[in-house]
Image 1 (cartoon, one colour):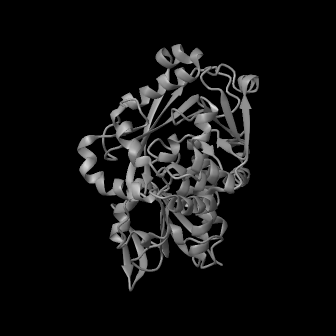
Image 2 (cartoon, rainbow, N blue to C red):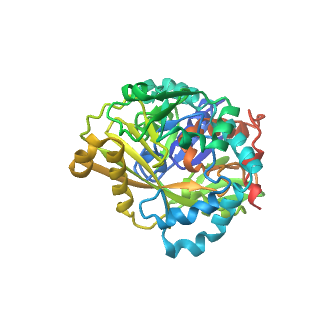
Image 3 (tube, rainbow, N blue to C red):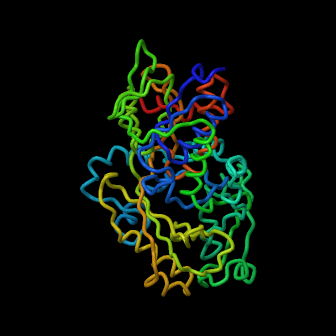
Length: 424
């Protein structure tokens, strides 16, 4: 097929989902334009600042039975993992009610877990394959992930989550006493049990990884348009062009993978998607010599602690506010206190050493599942957004599904749980 005869697909958004979709479409032989106003892997993207984990255990939704009873305590605890900027609450109320309803019963959570397991169960190998294909195999580190608990009772209190992980074949290995101390030197003594998720891995630098995937796409025929999509123009029920502030990009199809900004364009396509920004924060200690051979997640703090190529990253927090609101850097500073409480030798570098702070917007739906599938407005528009806390984990399988939909092939798994019309 000649270059002019190739179908032309515009991928709107250049975060981890967008570049994985572009990579899959390039390998399918399509002509791809990557529409991203900033740098690939830049700090404007949610995937830049995530906790780096790629784990088959990331199948438990945020909303669980009984969560409604805990929310007031979270909100009253200024140092807790969840906060809401109160002026934003009226807008958020309907989304929150749908969020709590999504986890109201074990049956609902079980269905959501199955859908998430389909998306992420093969993620470590899929990422390893991508990294090898694009020439950066060391970006994906297969060293597992260690959950930390203060005691066995705290571990067993995660009854439903533990049951669901076991049901989906998540492999876990326990460490206690000297075994835990030897595995994680310098760990605070309050942690007496570590549970290793042996099938997981982590990304050494999510921003650089996104950049590397985009660079491969560009080297293999894709183009980069530094612009924002303002609208989609259809003719006779079929996409004809993506509209930008500098004009139109004529195309045969478009994939909307624009993260938190996707809901506005989806509305223009006739789909009202309840998408909110779960704002997250991270800090990186830049001159930190902590020997951390495996990424850890203390379950009492709900934060990820992992060594990246640029420092020791502590990532977490859920803050509900407008995506355009200024960062509340007190949330990031709280992460500095938390890492010092886990590793006492870090108290001085965490408080006084060089630190980089970041805030970003996780694009989250109330039911905890991304939106993957065709738009209502007509043929030639597909959605790939709303991945919340599992963007890095689910990007490769999302890309496979989108590539199949664009090609008209049967998808490798049932996309019904992710369908846009589930919110209609």
